[in-house]
Length: 630
Image (cartoon, rainbow, N blue to C red; front, top):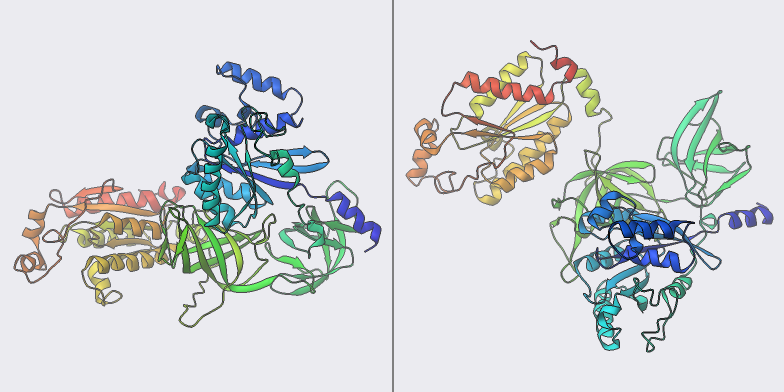
């Protein structure tokens, strides 16, 4: 590489500094950014007029936040719901200002907003001090590794610019950050609405000798140029036309030159770069970080999507067990043993949560061991895969190690920056799940129906197993792959070691749900017949199985069940021979909104079975097959 070529790469890719603005929903982030853009001359032509007109329509004075809240839902609700990015120039330096959501329900968008930032401005309403969202945002800054933090104490005009009161709030925020091993570079007392200490020194605070916000931003260290780092080119796709194979992707860091020898992914196949193609431009001899290109390789090897192209001298790390910081987004807890898809750049890997190392208590920001991660919680976990995963450890301000967990419904359920490989210690469980190459859609297309789990709950002798066996016989004649997981059958084998305490009942439900999920995944229609008396246990089953879980309430009152009592269990419970028997000395929690409610106190088994069978067919048969059914 010539000196001129190197210099041109660096000049062409002088990186803008990404600054994320975070804070409580009402602490004034959007107002701050609007004011900042105005005071530094970064508004587009006519934008100030647009803001004035928008404010007048709503009977307001000039509302700076209208600059960013471009979605109607944001103006109607007065909150920022997505991460807004705005280029911003300060003297000769380029910035990208990211306004990240502050409302708790929009925190998942903040993962994207903050993940590539080199520094953060934490906005705190000085009249309110640190709130729950302030703690969450500080925790997220810790999670994604941002260390250069500017704290803007906003709305100090509500404190009459009083030094002592402002200093008290500063001490409160300092204490919060210190619990997370964070330290603010500077505290700027300001009023975004009035413009105090944004780009000009405030006349209301002669006692403050620190920088304005713009001066503090100018002191943020320049990001490391991505072109100077070892090459990483994740393969986006491979195309073939005109008898040539094009390997397509975006260079995340480093440079690539015609003639370079690259290593392809975990297969470690070497290949020479024969040419570099770009869209709407002539072929070139080199390309660098941030550019999307197509490579023609020699020999004509075929990389897979997600393969990481790199040089042999600077390979990425490899491991099958990864330690990750986790921001859990689901509204239900995360438990050890759950399986997800881990997305790293263009690659996807099946991983299992094999260990929860620590969970953060958001009340006092302490860490503790635990068996689950609470909804919207923070934790450090170990993810295990069946094969080797190539990665670079997470680095703030880069795409390195920025993992995301995705569930079976392709929903993002967690941000998971990868810290590094996890060592295997004595006593560790070595969990390495594998994923079938046959998809659920492939199976459904062949079978003519999807898999599904129909969870029959109700008192003993309500008719669950009788109905399930009748429906099983019918669906089998209709060429549906169907099976019944009966409670007594499972307790005779898989769950023979369990009793009937609340803890054992929960474990019985968990095991049954895991088996049902596996059967569903290979295309079976599964009828589960368990009393499962507690709503919390049925909710656990729902979380394990997913959206295909259907709760069926088989309803018969206690008197009728005791009259039937085919196994003599009620009589034994009344005589004190059986303890913790549902309906006698243990509760049954009626489903609040079952997918189907069947009352077996009247009607015939045949009519109830056909009602259930029809409901199942409506949920699992493919439409073109279903339409042909008589």
